[in-house]
Length: 206
Image (cartoon, rainbow, N blue to C red; front, side, top):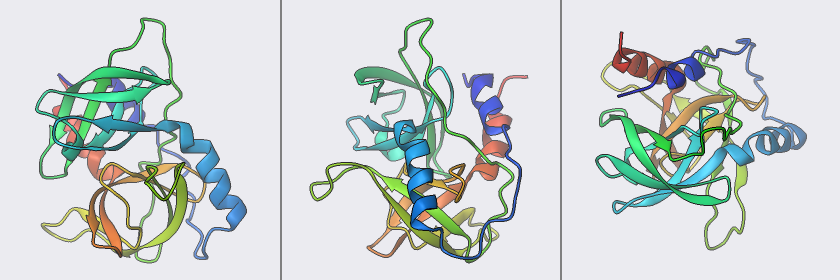
């Protein structure tokens, strides 16, 4: 069953300030990255491996359904490999929520969230993807929204070629979307946090 903790995190709406029209400066890009690098974690299962983002102080992680089995997955959190159970999954939005095994008094710093972000065509975002054979550490990328959600298609399209589960931040370093599908070498589809809020809140117990 989905916990109220995730709903509380998603409802932690930011200031809703206007997103800058210009590309974020290198300093802003680095600041957004440094603020969030420790919230991006590895997730894997028999289906595949990728990343997720910490959304709760008990280590709850939002990720892609591609990285989890039906009811469980494994995560690397706090420098340790841990088992995690799937508490929520939406096949259409391609998003899953994990609750890893943590010590009773263990706490983790969750990502800052802006569920009220005004995302429009041309909005600049900062993406963080997992290391690859060519990159020894996570790296920030700046990109823009190419297309906003349409009727029957709840995803934004960006020019950031990020893997499923990769978080997308605004220039202030607040989570605004999560990538769910790479589009070749040119971009990705992502679900916005506001859309996820509706889906998750609907799954919460009364």
